[in-house]
Image (tube, rainbow, N blue to C red; front, side, top):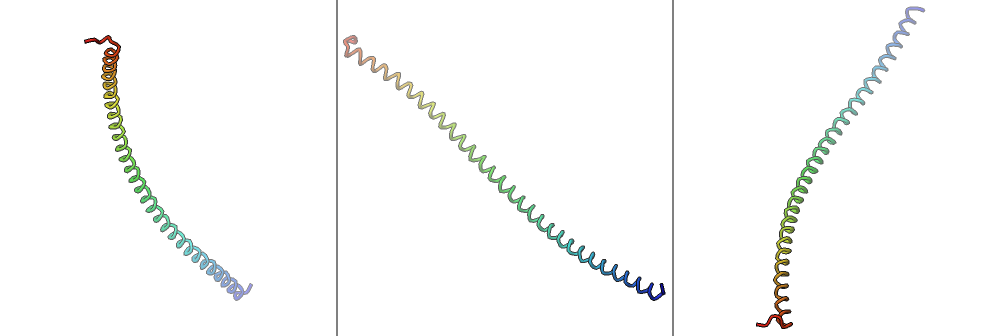
Length: 112
């Protein structure tokens, strides 16, 4: 091989390597851009997830407060029902006493 052929061959290899390096640089640039886009997407996704978690926590807190209020109202209603039942029981007792008095009066057993 002559020095000129050798030089041409080396020059072709250098051109091939330079072309290959240019392709690699372009691929690296594309990947870098894609990685940047992925990073932006992940930031947006994490912000969304954080907002969602915050809103969900607020909803749970409001739901807990509503359940507490409903539980308190239910207890008050149960206490009122107990008082009403006791009042009804006393009324029934008094009514039974009155019925007995009236029955004795009309049956003649309660002559005064």
